[in-house]
Length: 198
Image 1: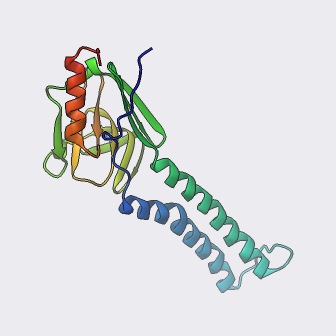
Image 2 (image 1 turned 90 degrees about the vertical axis):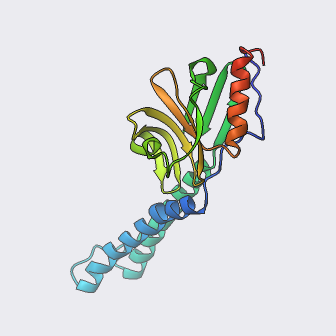
């Protein structure tokens, strides 16, 4: 079994405030707003209502409080999972963990001579096109996506400009946002050149 080493200087970028805003808006604000409207419309229309213990205030508190509690828990769990970002290198293997997802790929399967640091505004062919098994918000993508170049890729990117594209010799590529993509690429190339000797 290989001795895995986590290098603190080669970490994945954490999701930024834009992704946090969208997560809160979609998991808390929107459901609470929709529920409030769904409750308010029949009340304002004066139609027949199904009330808890015949009490309108109790019904409103239970319904809105319940949905707010449920959505608050969902938001908290997803916010914590979004911050689950890890990159582990061993002499033979690259392992990426991002939110719910994990990808392990042997270094020999990466085309490191073709790998490069890219700006997705310039290299639009590497932007995500279709989520196949992933978690995506504006400013954060994690998991398996089909890129515009039609390659299935494991993606772990946040809101920064510089991404590291690692083409694979197999069925998929990787698109990562490391805090220092140049250092990550240099480390991967050094490990690959050493032939798995560390």
